[in-house]
Every structure is written in C-alpha cells, then in structure tokens.
Image 1: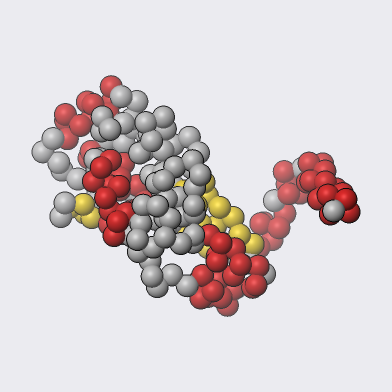
Image 2: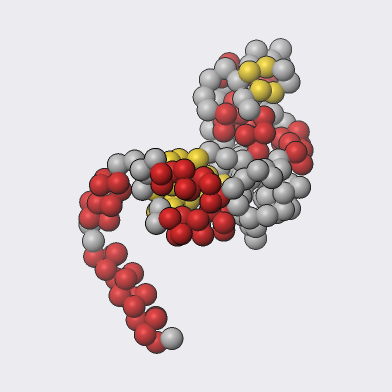
Length: 196
C-alpha cells in the first residue's frame, strides 16, 4: 500500500512540475480523436414540437428551444440506449487511427451519463436504461489503449435552479409565438427561461 501511494504521489508531483505544453504534448502528437455528445438531447434529434432547431448543435436544444424543464426531463424516460456498445465504439475509433475519445459525462442540460450522487437527474435514476455508460467506455478505452476524457459541465446547468444558463434567444431555436415573452423573461432571469 505504501509503495502504491508513493508511486501515485510521485506521478502527481511529476504532473505538477510539467508545463502546460509538456502536459498537452500527447494530445498534440495524437492529432486525431473522437468527441461524443450523447445524452437526453440525442433523443430529440434537433426537433421539438414539430420544429427543427434553427441554430447550434442538438446538444443545445433544451436551451435554444426554451423547452420547459418538466418537459425536457420527461424526455429522459424515453432515453434508453439499449444498442450502446462501448467496445464497438472504441474499436471503431481505434481502427480509424484515433488516439483519444472524449464524451459528455454531463453536458449543460445537467443530465449525467453515470450514477451521480449530486442529483437523480442521471441515466441511472431518470432513464429506463439504468446503467452507467462511462464505466464500460472506460474499460473499452483501456482494452484498446485509447485515452479517455470526460467533458463535464460544472457551472452551466440549465435544469438546476443554482446553475447558470447561456442567454440564447428564441430565434436560435424556433419561431415560437411566445418568443418575445420568453426572451424578456430570459433576460430578466440571467438566462433562465422557465420559473422551474
């Protein structure tokens, strides 16, 4: 145990003495990797109430389309990625020559792809899938020698009353007849569009 702790601490100390450029050298040399946006927003596929999202990536649909929090959270009840195959994803990346993979462990919508202890707004509690997606992905990355990174949105959280929200206007979502009212509310409430 002492030896393991000593090795770990030496590794931590070595990381602290490296410059940013030295720490990022592997990434600059890797040059090719995969960034995966995956979560409840994937279920909507860029469409809400029969309208296509006007601008931005589908991962911004909750914010740009100003979906009420309750409606968006209900979508998680349909998020059931039963065909998720971590091994196939990572093997495909490796076979294509990719050196790393980054996934949205928790995007700005606040939905976590792991069993979060901070909230029940996660894949284990809010979806029928009820399995951690990140553990098998980490195991597959280790198996194939692909570096794994997690994109974790900390401050911006559109469904949490304490989270911040980007002040995007309705014109970036869809031509909602209530756009002016929603945009005014959003301006007055630091980016939040729903009293919930």
